[in-house]
Amino acid sequence: MRIVLLGAPGSGKGTQAKRLMADKNIPQVSTGDMLREAVATSTQFGLKAKSIMDAGNLVPDDVVLGIISERIAQPDAREGFILDGFPRTKQQALDLDDLLDQVGTPLDTAVLLDIDFKVLMQRLTGRRTCSLTGKLLNVYSSSQEELDECTNAGGELIQREDDNEETIANRLEVYRKNTEPLIDFYRNRGKLTTIDAEGEIDTVYARLLEAL
Image (cartoon, rainbow, N blue to C red; front, side, top):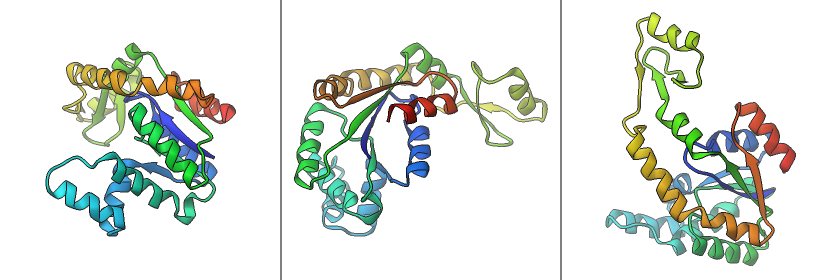
């Protein structure tokens, strides 16, 4: 099972990928994790990436693709992988298709975790962490009992600095502009699987398994 995971910030990609990874015994291949691992282990492309990052520059697509090719050649990816965070643009998707075809591991599907942006805004701006327990809560969707459990014990409901409405609106706009065109890209190739990502984590995961 070789899949690309698509979805806006807050759509639940990381959560669902971790469950799928555990159930199907295939790795979640995150571009950030891959870059760090390639640099740490001094792979061919890791060394290239390190020199570029040390100079304060963004790692170009051809180096990222090289790191992906190194990662998916590892034994744990033999039965498949979940690509998370790449591609982000149509050109990256084209380059990725070429790479996977070259190594004989074409993509099975791109999974879109589809959710209304209004729901995402509530999901992200409502996030709070209990200062006592570290439990993640939401002022819109958590029960009053859960919220009171933290505050009654003397804890605070802390909001992350970047979970404000302006920052999140900007992140969603960047996603809409750069990444949404990938939806049509994969749909036109008959490789798009769309999942309704609203609801409880278990419910969404059941939809994901059924679709796959």
